[in-house]
Amino acid sequence: MSDRQRPALSVLDVAPVGSGSTPSEALTRIGPLAQMAEEAGYARFWLAEHHGMPSIASSSPEILIHHVASRTQRIRVGAGGIMLPNHAPLRIAEAFHTLEAFHPGRIDLGMGRAPGTDPATSRALRPFDPEQFSNQVAELLALSRGEFPEGHPFHGVKVVPGDVELPPIWILGSSGASARLAGTMGLGYGFASHFSPTPAGPALEAYREAFRPSDRFPEPHAILAVSVVCAETEEEADYLSRSMDLAWVQLRRGRFGPLPTPEEAMAYDYSAQERAIVQQYRRLQVQGMPDQVAARLQALAQETGAQEIMVSTMVHNPEARHRSYELVAEIKPTERPPEPEGPGGRM
Image (cartoon, rainbow, N blue to C red; front, side):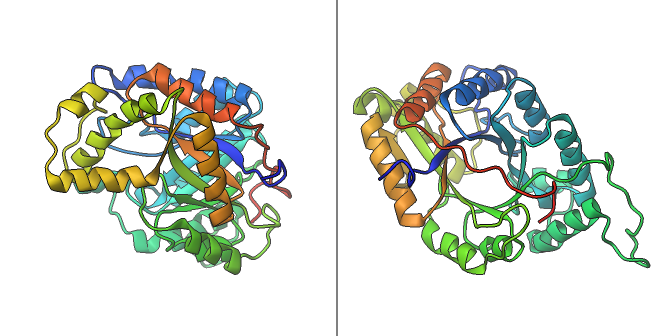
C-alpha cells in the first residue's frame, strides 16, 4: 500500500480503570497519552461517553475534551462519541459551541444513538428513545444555526456562545443503521468495529452511496474504530489481551467491575460458552507485533474503504497500553486528514 493510500491513525480513549486502580488515577493518564499521540503523529484523540461502568472513567467527554485540548496544540480532539439520546440537543449544542470557542478549528463532535450504559443508569439520565436520534440531530443543527421558523416553540432560542458554530459532526454506529443518515446529511461517519461483530463494509458502502457533499464534508470520510493490542512479541500481546477476554465475558454476563489483570483472567475457569464469547471477541481484535498489526490494519482499510483507523487499546497495565499506542504509531508515518472546509458547523 502506498503512502497516499495509507489511512490516517487516530486514538479512541475511554480512560480504562484497571483492577487495583481508581477512576481518578485513570483520568490523570489521559493528558500524557494525548500528548504522546500528538507527538507520534496521530490525527485525532477522541473520548467516548459511558456511564455507571467501573472499568471506564469517561462519563463526561466534553470536560475531558477541554482537558486534552488544553494540553495539546495540534491534534484534533473530540467526542467518540456523545450519546445524544441521553441529552437535550440544546445542551450539547451549547457545550460544543463553548469548546469550539476555546479551541477553534480543533474540535470534533461525534454522536451515537446507544445509551452507553445499563438500563437503570440510562433511566437516571433521562427518558431514552434511540428512535428519536435522527430528529435530535436535526434539532441540534437547527438550534445551532437558528433555523427554527416563526411559530415553532424553539424559534428565537439562542445557543450561547453564538459567535462560533458547531465543529464538524460525525455520526457513529455499530450496526449500519445510521450510515445513510450520515451520508444524506453530509456528515462524517464512524463505525465501531472495536466491539461490534457486524461487518463494517456494508455500512461504509451505504454511507458512501447516500453521501451528499456539504461545506464541511465535500467528500465522504469514514472512520473505522478497531480494538488493537500491539507489543514487542506475540506472546506479550496475547498476555495483555487476556484482560479483555475476561472483561468481555463479565460484560456479557451483566457483571460490571474494573478491568481485570491478565493473571486474574488466566486464573478464571471459563465455561465452554464463555470460551466461545472470548473467541468471538478475539476475532474483532487486532493483536500482535508491529508488522502483524500493520498488515491487518492496512487490510481492514482496503476491505472497508475507510480513510481513517481509530485505535482503541484496552489493557490493564497503563505503561503497556501507552507503549501499544507508540508501537502502532511507529508502524508507518500517519497522514493527517484534511481539515473540514467551510464555515464552522455548516453541514
